[in-house]
Image (cartoon, rainbow, N blue to C red; front, side, top):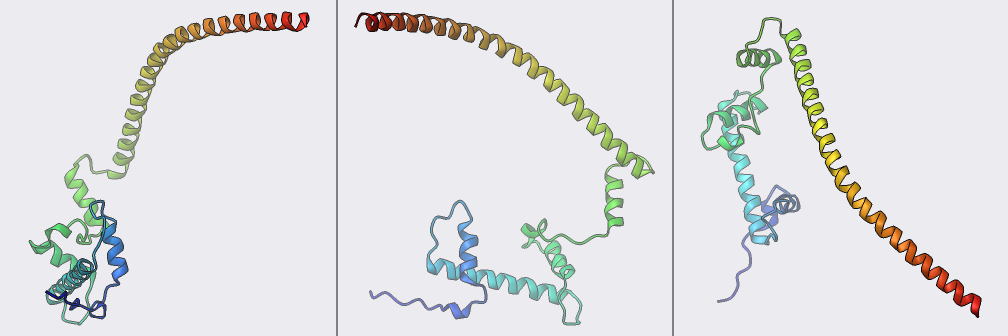
Length: 180
């Protein structure tokens, strides 16, 4: 069988192949990217983007514009796009966020003072934890110091014997030089 030329043309794509290839190679599981594979992934990505934007436009306003909130709504309501829910969340206001956090952590009505006191409490807890860790380090340091001091005693003894041998060698070499 004769090999057929690739039926695809880079002109058929809107995404730059070099970018798609760079993104694909950023995966630790991808070593090489063939040209056919690169074209297919780029084309599939374009079709996915097209599908997402058409659905968002359909659900959105009829003014002809496409907004982030339309895309987020499609992602949040479609089961097939569930994998994008953390990446494309619905936008919420600061007030809505604070209300959500208040429902999650009902502490007190004065949220600003409770937040600062909880921050200082967590700081003091981390301080006490770190001071406890420091105590462990000191104990370990003392244990290590004992070990290193005994090993340093051995090394001192070895150094002393080396010095004595060195002095003996020096005195022997001095005697040899004095004789000559």
